Image (cartoon, rainbow, N blue to C red):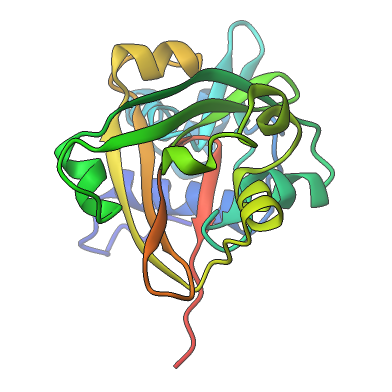
Length: 240
């Protein structure tokens, strides 16, 4: 219950109670939560305060609304970084039906950022692969990868729709991951990203950048993965 002697604002207390109910599994994915009226009565708060808290949680992807039916818990899938095990492989192991759509495959002059991360000469040619991953026909992530053009022969549209990039690079070219430099940040959806992910412009997304190195210490892949923040959460584990 709310503690009215606590200096923490009541709306913040309610938010924490609702978040805990979701994170603890008290309310499961796609489960309907109590209505605004019910929450207002349960916690002795105005409907305006309750609505404000629910609107925040909807905007941040904890909940979603269905017109005329109520407010429901969003399904948020927990994955490891794709630098260690491919997103497709992880989701398939969880029992999800995964599909991939190739948006773009081409050789192009690399930007300064791309060539620097791959330790190439400025504006050297790179092979770009852009694809979208789907769960049950719903887009969840955009993957943009850059590798040397010398690996392009096996990286065809057909192969990449059926298999993960890391598997092809390993099996066809003997490239094994030895080290990964990784960054994770929150970004706002651009118009193109919003269209590809079937979401709204400026909605929060997760951007993961990976530079992957082989055993010789040289980088062979630079990838950006853009996740729908309301559908995916990334688990990071460290051991000392």
